[in-house]
Structures are given as structure tokens and as C-alpha cells.
Length: 283
Image (cartoon, rainbow, N blue to C red; front, side, top):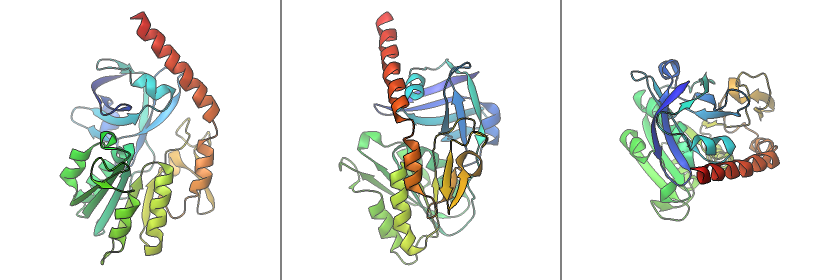
């Protein structure tokens, strides 16, 4: 059992939770993720990227958005409650080296998994430029943490409520056009955002890394649910990734696969809302 030691609501549907997971906190590296399960019997297993960890305290931090049944239930957990099962760290860690200038692009809660990567790139001696994007100011996460490590920080919002009114690809292209151009780009966020970030950097031949969050069950490569096509080959996000060359990922195929269980997810989501409403009425 993994006891929750910290919880904060960041916006209407985004939460930050820290919980006890000493082994994961000690072993995790940038880019890796974990799988958690709330119910030991029949609970859904969901992959979530590690946003931060404290090896001394033995705690791991995740930032998640309530989009499905399990995340909505997790959002009702409070400090002192425990998560039944947590498996990790999983996946291949980010390759970190001194390259020169790294431009890190995060969309929505994709900023959370981007943070440890940007932090590690900075510690390796790189100049780190961070571009953060969200639909509105209220949905931005980890601005203070990113501002503390970034050499340059650009914030974009779709509605113009904070920073630039623009998509993240707009400042990304501007940095690509500079001389010298960035040596590396890392993009994490919704699949469509990562796709267009990769298309933005492609004409400039800038190596672009993306982190994929696909349908996943076991996290060991056995179920095949997380398979994606990269460079014409089948890869498994849980063991071969989650990071891949963004110029080689078949994003269209991945997005089609992500919608495979939409009907079942909507039904479970609807039932979850009913269950939570009943619990509220019973209080």
C-alpha cells in the first residue's frame, strides 16, 4: 500500500499527488513512468509519468487529469488514503547528454513529465528553452518549477489569458529558424500536439524526441496493447519507450488506436459519475 502524503488541486480537473513509494523514488530516472491500480481485485491499471521524486523522503509525485473512471476515483483520494498497487519505474529513461541547446515543449499536463527531463538536460550543462502551452492560464502546471531551471521560458495559451495567444508550434518554429538552431527538441503533450511539433522541426533536421502515452495493461510488453509503429516497425511503448524519434512515429495510427475503447471508456466514465454522486448524497 502506498500512502498519499500530499494532494493539491491545480485546476478543475488536474491534481498533484505525492505518495510513498521508496524503491521507485530511489531508482526512477527522467522519462520513466509507473502503473497504478486502485483496486487490488478488478481495478484498472493506468500508466502515469513520474513528475518528480524525493529519494530521501521516499515519495513520488504524479500530476494527472481526470479523464476516465480511474482518474476520477483517484481524485477523491486524500492525504492518508493509500493506493493499492504501484509498479515502477517502467520504460526506458531519457538519454541525457550535453548537446548545446535543448528546446523542451510541453502541452497541458505534458509539462509534468517534461519537467524531470528538462531538469536533467540543464544539469548536464545544456541551455534549456522551455515552451509551455495550455488552453487557458488556469490549466498551466509547474510554471514555477520550470521557470527555476529554464534559461528561457515561453508560455502560450489558446485563449490568450496568459503569455502569448498562440499554439506552441509558433515559438518552436521561431527558435528553429535561429542561428544556431537548437540541437535537440523534446515534445510531450497530446498526440496531435506532438505530431505537429515533430512536423515543425522536421524541415530543420532537429532531432525530436516525443513521449507516448498509449493504451497499456501490464507494462511489460506482453499484452501488446501499447504497440505503435515507429519507422515502419512495431514497437511497444512500455518497454521500447515511452520516448521515440518524433519524425518516425506514425501518429495517425496511434491516435486511431487510442480511440479503440472510447465507447467502453464513456460508459465507465458515466457510471463512475453516478457512483460518486451517490456517495456524496450518502454523506
